[in-house]
Image 1: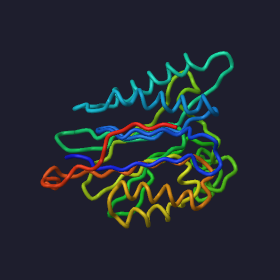
Image 2: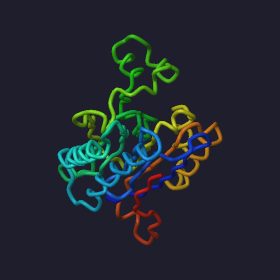
Image 3: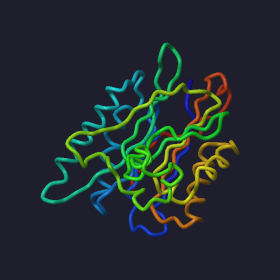
Image 4: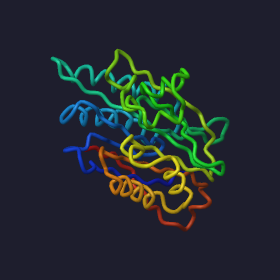
Length: 254
């Protein structure tokens, strides 16, 4: 199995700088949404990308390897942000791994950047936001359909670099060849609903073209925040014979 992917990022129409960062280098794909303003949030997200880039090209990756990336990034941020200077970042993504010779996605997140899976069953949000509104929904205080409009939906309860130790969540999903992963910062879902995302993903097509369209759609709806998108497909090697390889591994920030 191999991967085909696309990615796009934009600072939006309101923010002065782009504090988002992303990484697309098999087997790891992620986005990071920095917090702390210029020269803090963008540094925090870049640190996350730099540490996870150490997984690039790895033949075998496990949860312990991913968690080590979180731990190293957290340590670097604690060392960087001293003297009252504050910074942190969300991180969400997936690593293609092998379990009993079958491909799986090891999905991870901390904060409110998201990982979605689109399959024959429709769109599913795999990750769970670490926000006040989401925790209220989990506790039954508000309905789940009220999360997207709750005033505390953007108030985070977890982020990388803001605590003593990282607290990511992990999921293991079979990597189906008819599935598509969408990894995004909250700048996308602030402008586009899950129904909007489902319609876009259902249209199929090249992952890079889709990533570009999603970012353009978020900008057209207002672009009130930085927006970053990664779209990933798992492709059988046999399907790639005779085709040109058009996706390029990269890390992008700011």
